[in-house]
Amino acid sequence: MPKIGIMGGTFDPVHYGHLLAAEESRRILNIDKIIFVPTGDPLYKKHYNYITPAEDRYAMTLLATAGVLEYSVSRTEIDRKIPTHTVDTLREFLNSGIDPEDLFFITGLDAVLSITSWFEYEKIPDMCTIVTAPRPGWDVKAINNLPEIILNKLKVVEIPQFAISSTEIRERVQNNKGIRFLVPHLVQIYIESNNLYKIKI
Ligand code: ATP
Ligand code: MG
Image (cartoon, rainbow, N blue to C red):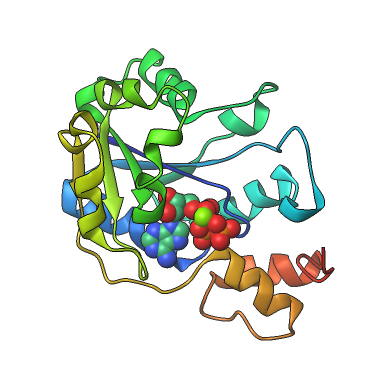
C-alpha cells in the first residue's frame, strides 16, 4: 500500500518552508504521495485574523505543487461547510481505505507543540504517524513536554531550516519588499496579479 503524507496548513500564502518540510518528510520516510490540505474559510472573519479567501489559497497551493508527480492538493477542508479539525480530515482519509500505518500527518514544530489544544487530539496517534519538521525559533527539546501518547507516534525529521513564514511574506508584500525566491514563481505572480496582501488590515 502506498504511504500517504498529509500536509495541512492555512497556506496564506504557501511558501518554500512548507514545500521543503513536505518534501524532506517524504524523502526521509519514503512517503509515496503528499496531499496538501488548505484549511477552509473561517466561519467568523475578524479584522485581526483576516484570512485570504480559501479559493485563492487553494489556487496558490495548486500553482506551487503543479507538475510534482508525488504532490496533490485536497479540497476537503475548503468544501466542508462546518468547522473542520485535523481529526476529521484524518478520519476522512482513513475512511477512503488508507491504513493508519500508511498515513503520516506532517507539521512544523510550532504546530505540533500546540497539539494538546487541538480538538480530540488524543485520537490522532491511533490514526497516523505524526511527523514534525524543526522550525527556526522553536526548540526541538520542547517536544519532551508532550504527552506520551503523542511522543510514541511522533517522528522528528532533520531538514534544512528556512526562517520563513506566511506572516513574513504578507508583511513583505505590504511593505513593498520583494518575495522572489521565498515563494514559487507562479505563487509570486498570482499574489501580484490579484493584489493580495496589499491592504493593511
Ligand atoms: P502563518 O505565519 O500565517 O502562521 P506559516 O508560515 O506558519 O503561516 P501555516 O500555514 O500556518 O504557515 O503552516 C502550515 C504548516 O507548515 C504548519 O505545520 C507549520 O508548522 C509548517 N511550516 C510553516 N512554515 C514552515 C517552515 N518555515 N519550516 C517548517 N515548517 C513550516
Ligand atoms: Mg503558522
